Length: 292
Image (tube, rainbow, N blue to C red):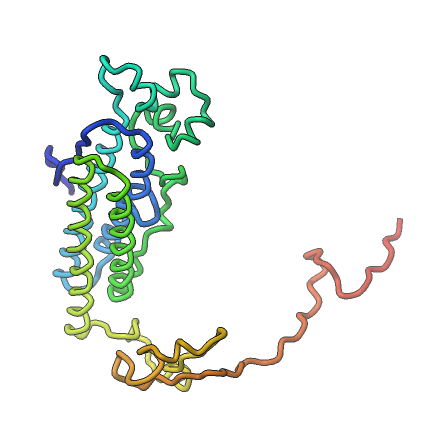
């Protein structure tokens, strides 16, 4: 059961409206690496968690926090779409999606200008669960596999990509109010990256899983002779200089081997057999004439 507190986790008020920037901000709300994605990912990871209670509680702590981030971003977008003051009506036509659309601007001109016409037509000056080009948010962006080590590694990636996009957005505005909120979100991404890295280490120390995940699959069932080989599959051999090409493997169970000219191990490619004629594919031989 969730209870909403009538106070933002942090401030979400721009200095002035900016509908073009509002559209940019949609990316970190409803994009692949946006706050809706991590919110839903963490909540489902927590709800599905069968591991010790400390992990479930931690996951749901951050999942619930992400709900607050979604509300902050949605509110910031709505405030960026507010009409300018009455005494600046001429600027309103420039700085407000409503002013531009209602003022007779063509939709295609609004799009070229970087505004999102749906902010006026569909949401009435509010945020929408889409990315910055209008693609709807999808649950395909979420990951909740039931294996915490695999999920936590994805979470590090999600927080890294999210932090990257927010830092880029920070550089795209001079508005002190927007920058203030983004600086908070960037700092929370710093915390969350460290949080997931710490959780990965604790999972391994608790003996619940190890690299390669999942350790519940016996390694004697995998083809051990290729388990620690690095295959050079492109032109050049610069990759041989990396940590991944020689020395002990991170899991402590093998030594990296670099194959500069790996040989294919599979069978020679042959033609597929004739398709079932009921599927009406192209046959291997000319078809007999169809009788009338």
